[in-house]
Length: 361
Image (cartoon, rainbow, N blue to C red; front, side, top):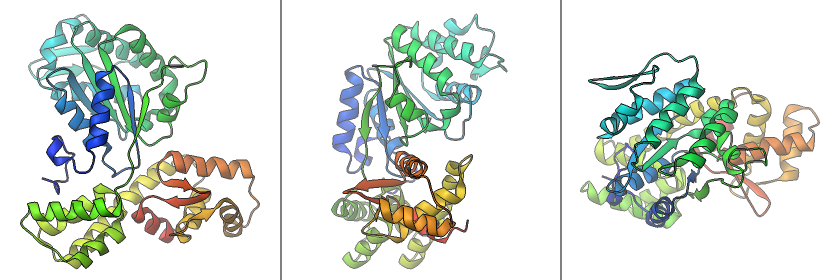
């Protein structure tokens, strides 16, 4: 069902991403490690889950969401939970974990005892998987969350790459933090010369967005006027997550059009605000918000570099170092919040534009 709010797992539910799904499957079959890139609500999780589902007769697919994890310890917990939820996986490698004191195999699957050496424990876990002989594809979602522990994790990934050909990784996230280190490894990185292949998702075009809403409404036995559909697409743009949320509110919850759109916008803005706060942790909040606000008010044409610098300086009443400002803009671009085209910066998510326009310093 197109308007199901959960991530899609079947090809017939994955609207408008046939070419991307085919490419991801091709890359996995070729033995490549892959990084699926794009802003939130664009469909990265659904794409990965559909690929894992279609390859289930050939590979054991393991999906782990790392959103909110801050270290290798919490990543281990996420991986163990993912393995426990993957059908048939435990029996394949429980004998390889039997001698590792950090793990316990019980009737409910694997449990992780408190480990004072998460790096060693992670090595042990992947070693156990690698020695089974089965081919694993491990999808790590929102991997940018692990930026703080990237040196340790890169060593682990480098070891897996060199040692276990039967383990592949698919990463997803915005192009900053650990994803950036994965994609642009320096000469001293364990993954230097072995960076994952990039697969970037773009927002739907207006025509695809309109067709998506029409298909979802038809699936629910509803018809809707062209002008109202156009108005929804104009407000929510081509991010399939917001379009799905609106369709769910309208066709599944059966809210009136105005109420469905209003609740979609308010709920979406709440999600965006929470994620923006998460992104700004440890960063210069006033500067980042000022940059976003200046870019937002320049829609739909976007803001040139000189405009951003001049107006942010006016907003903050201070002179900015050009290199520092460029680093801020680059960070926003890598996070999937800002795009650059023809020398102009724009904010991808229409709800993010509304949030930053109304968020006080």
